Length: 463
Ligand code: SF4
Image (cartoon, rainbow, N blue to C red; front, side, top):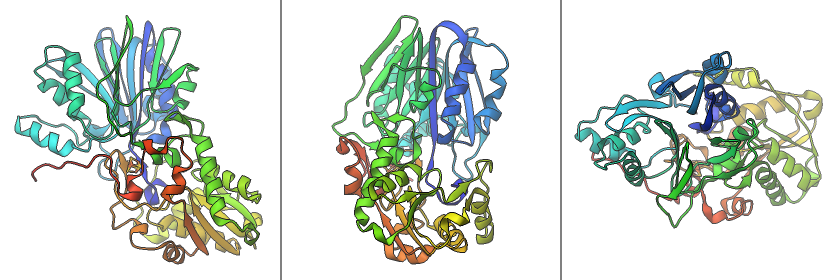
């Protein structure tokens, strides 16, 4: 789907690597970052230790464009971190691309962060009052300021103190000297995995990024865990415990790659189950001829729907994977063209058919209306839209870019009204209670943008 039009957007993916022996760490970082490209396509960067000095290279663009140069030469190192980033419109600035490197009273540091602090406004205000100067709008820089302001006598103690000030979502990696620091917030909003092989330690947002380096022995970094990796090995401790876990349910619905494990769960199996549960809601399948997905986001759930219903699963929409970066699209005509550039119906499949069309979620409804129109003009008899996410009702304070409440179609329209708005014959969502049946330990997930039950309330400053 075209990110510029109607999709919830993620903020980033991270990677951290430590090796007991020198190796081409920048190149090692390239491959897992490439695997995490789906988590952010607007900026990429790496930091690594080069002859005792911390070096950072980052730019706007895709991983292969920004970091492809690191495939050409051997740059020996023992520790590095990397980041891929998505940014909101207007925030697509080089200053916001990570890792963020800084020199402070605790030494040279570099950090890469996935998530958002829900108390960042408050922390920023307090630090600004103390004279801190911020060089970017990303809240990840706060961590460096808090470490620098800490009165603790060691870096480790300062870091631990800092982590306890932070609220909301953070999966982070950091370099200090020859050490890799790995941290995950106590509620575990964002996924983070760590694995080892032959003296190499790799951590990454999703397991697909470990697979590419043939790291098979991995585990999830625990919520509230702080890990230090250095030449002595790996040291881990739980820096804070939370009664409540809040793993982002949208990660399993849409963000993560289907071949990944996150939150100790297979993304593929979860999506398959969402499709099956969606189908069970419909019951009478004689009213439909086939199931198809909006590729790629709806593929696995559509397959689940087809398996449960016994309807045939057809690839009725062809996706063009070569459309590159998204554009700002001011008019409906141009938005339609952009969708057409990316998706096109296969006429002989859809003509005269009563179609179940599965997608992951509905945000504003603008893209769905164009897709339904495309299918109708290709001859579809009926289009029944099914979403593997519940109705999105509110913002996310934990690192996902959800449009404003007013823009979310489910805040102003019932599913019947949405069907009318997008020109579909029917629209059905997967309700939150049904989504929960797709997850093991469903109480450990966050559903706040669907049900307004925010695990940690955002804290704002005085302004
Ligand atoms: S509010 Fe929604 S998008 Fe944000 S963490 Fe919770 S489930 Fe994920």
